[in-house]
Amino acid sequence: MNSNAVVKPSAEEVASAACFWLIESIEQSILRKGRCVLALSGGSTPKKLYEQIARDHLATLDWSKVHLLWGDERNVPHDHPDSNFLMVKSAWLDPAMASGNVHQVPNYYPVFIAPNDPEKSAYEYGQTIRSVLGDSSAIDVVLLGLGDDAHTASLFPETQALESLDGFVANYVSKFESFRLTMTASLINRARRVAFLVCGESKSPALDVVWHGPKDPALYPAQSINPTTGELWWFLDMQALPARDRVHLGELGA
Image (cartoon, rainbow, N blue to C red):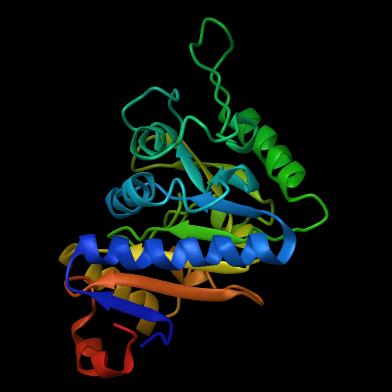
């Protein structure tokens, strides 16, 4: 059982707990160094978190001191229904938030303007990340999800990105026959705080193998996330909690 695990009865309560933790994390970062760099995740549970921020917290923080990055993105236009950027934009992004602080992954659509080039997008976004971080190589807070196959961000089983030491790469995923653009474990593990948001019974087997093994990050990429000096947190609902861990609920911060 992970010591920094917070278990709640429902996905809505998971989002609320994660939102409280996130706002506190942002406040601590701003207090410590005057700003916060936050890397966002796609997915249904993070979307609930973003909606809660939009509903309850737009006035509670100075969002001009928060820089937003994307942990991964699909290789689609920003207005495509599958775009992680579009999801965050529609769920949360405050029109008053400084546009210079919203750092979406570049793309090259439509193709008649410039050819679709995921490698170029990844390279340019890597440069953006370095520019945003400046002298610090550490993102303050990274939000992640967990797939049924134990992927996280767009680090999928047995893909080349799992071996990359670059910060942000184009990762070809054969089961989708397409590229995904993603932060690597190398960059994520330098973060000060990392949080997984995991909900639903379908995620329980993946979470079980990530927590309990066998240890094989090539097959179970989420196992590669282990911050070097930062904190790792898990926010999950009862349905996602592996059966062997339910007897330890009294030890959790639920």
